[in-house]
Image 1 (cartoon, rainbow, N blue to C red):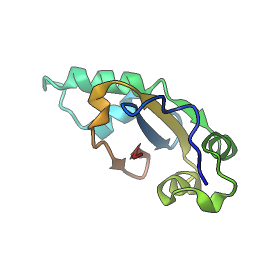
Image 2 (cartoon, one colour):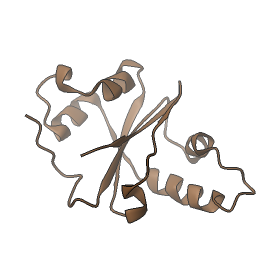
Image 3 (cartoon, rainbow, N blue to C red):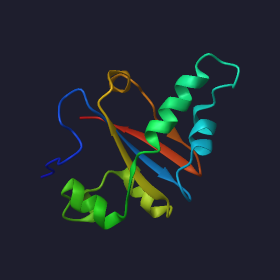
Image 4 (tube, one colour):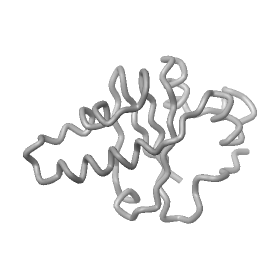
Length: 118
C-alpha cells in the first residue's frame, strides 16, 4: 500500500514529476511550453518555469523512500521510464490554484513532465 508523505498538505496541492536528461533548466522548460516570446502568455510561462526550477531532485532510492514503495515493480510505468532512460527525476509541488486544473503533461526524448493525479 502506498501512503503519501510530505508533498500534499491539502486537496488543493498539485504535484508534478519532471524527468530530464542533464539538469533542469529554464531553457528546457520554455522549449517544452512552446510559447512565442511575443505572446502575452510568455511571462506566465516564464513564471511557471521559474517555480518548477525549485523542484527537488531525487535518485531512484530517494524517490522510492519518499513515496513509500517497497519495490521497483510498484512504481508507475511513466516514472519507471524516467529512470530507465537515465533521466534525472525532479518533483515539484505547488499549492497555487492555477496548477490545480492545469493538464500539463509533456513527453519528448529529453524532457518528461507528468502531473500526478490523486
